[in-house]
Length: 138
Image (cartoon, rainbow, N blue to C red):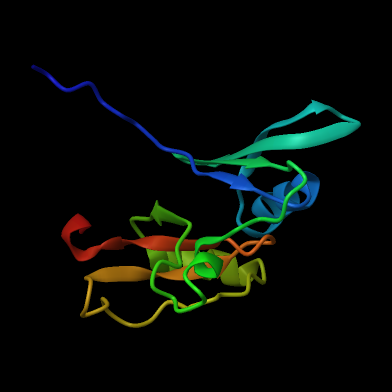
């Protein structure tokens, strides 16, 4: 049987304030806001997109629970999303020009333990995003 293509996946983050989260992704990380609503005076859901990456954001009256807070801050499962980036150096330079604070900056070469090259950014609600690629993707 032939497999049908899957062309993307979008994490769904619970956030405190959707307009603030939308601004973070648009202004600092260069995402486009593709939806916010359901109306201009009641924005509790939003979608941001950059390339093939999309993130759904929704405020439901509870605090966000990023992965790093669930593993007792041991850092075992800290990423909330992995965003594949063919050129993490160029993206890191872009983010630097936007004054993005890196949680874990880009380092020289590939991580010897997992073969990854990239960097981490924590969003306005504490979700940790990894931007990069695996050595096998080069």
